Length: 305
Image (cartoon, rainbow, N blue to C red):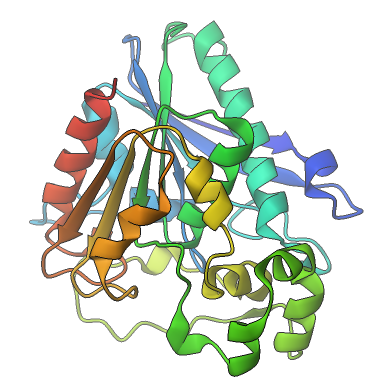
């Protein structure tokens, strides 16, 4: 397995008024032409390592990236702007998901061009026919939906721990009453008003006693993108515009209420698959059910039309 790390200048699309770059890591099968690329974007308060978590001795493989690479596929792990090794602007309220999704889209274009030309590493041959699948969790899934509606890069989307109806438990009456188009156009100003204490908050230390942990992927939670994820139907037009197959994965104890309403958001998709993952809360990969989930995602992606 080959690992290749790089950063890409995304200053123009980020619109921060300062230089910006997005950090990414590729996992590539050695001396094999990959047919699929999984593009992985983590959720809020996480970095790219969520998709490449360490595996304690005696546990089934935890890293989604390693599982897919061992099946002969290429994997791209992205740090969204504001997370990991990617740029966080001096004014972190500027992290509007429309901007962070555009930066991710530019990065995916760069990755696909490099893989098709075989220019990343001589040990990984050119893959001119490679197809991409977006795999994303929570807020990262929101970004992937926005990215797909704009760029149409992926042949399928696997969206984990996300639906378009927001998070009602965290909403005020004012949040519920706001016009969604106005909110999206003015999200940065609204985030400043809604969260005046600052553009992020720190995640509390984990109290979990699980041997499998996402601790090395935990980041600060940025309030501007979080507000967009909290408000209902903010990206419903983007979801309806998705015209490729969609796989939805929700834990049976996830954050989103009735999972069976979620597929309705993707009315433009020719095929929507819903998996309700047993005995699983929001961060799916730390639960034993991940083995089942990884296999389902892989077989679904390998059989995309």
